[in-house]
Image (cartoon, rainbow over all chains, first blue to last red; front, side):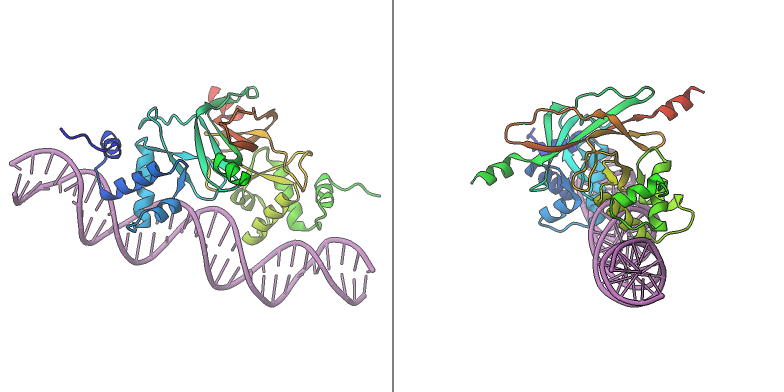
Length: 145
Length: 145
DNA sequence: TTATATTTGCAACTTAGTTGCATTTAATAA
DNA sequence: TTATTAAATGCAACTAAGTTGCAAATATAA
């Protein structure tokens, strides 16, 4: 039995058909280390895909726990690849997101948990998200040249 | 010298003309304890205002430090009244926002500072925002009845 | 009370995302 | 290997959120 590429394995596990469109979109996510919007994806796939197809693929991937929405200050929704602890049933994206105000990319800081904060009486927490804005590593290094 | 209403004082301080539109929109913000979107405001003012006027007023108020944008999971931008430490020059909204998943309102938790988290090497922080999702006081109390 | 810069309203536009439906295709079964 | 079928794709048309340019109205200062 030949081993499937990682990308295909992800689709298989999610019970999704292995279509060229899905492989292409997943490949784009694997290529970039930051969260992607519809526009990012549309610009990155060589063979032009229909707008509706891209939006529907993103929704499907999200439902199946392959990607998660990233809270961001831009006007477009951005998604990032989930790590293995995400499931179809529950997204485990309790990590910090970092938005660079210079290059406008949003990174998942996977190894930083969101600190929990005490809430006023009567409020109960279900989920937290945290967005840190600043300058990313690449932009900081560029500034030193 | 007659004392101005608080609402007028806010506009005066911001060097904005005291127009009926601005007074109406500010009044709506003072009425509700949670963040408001264009739609919330449009639905709350009795005398119908032009869409463009509302959007432009929100932008002006934001620039003058009267309101601040609130990070939210909804598809519309929401704004909340700034407290006195905001200025025209810099928004001091370093407090937590709480979004109720039941009533969908977003509250500013003014007295809770956002904890700072260590970032990976090379990343520098400028500003953080934190959104806690859960059930608000009112909705929790309703559930007990 | 008039002059002027600001504010408002209208129309038309842009951008982000969705819905319905007909066609195509991946995966299963024969 | 081919036939079957449920799922996936593409097209057209639509909605929702927000913007731009310009002309008319108005708050304030002289």
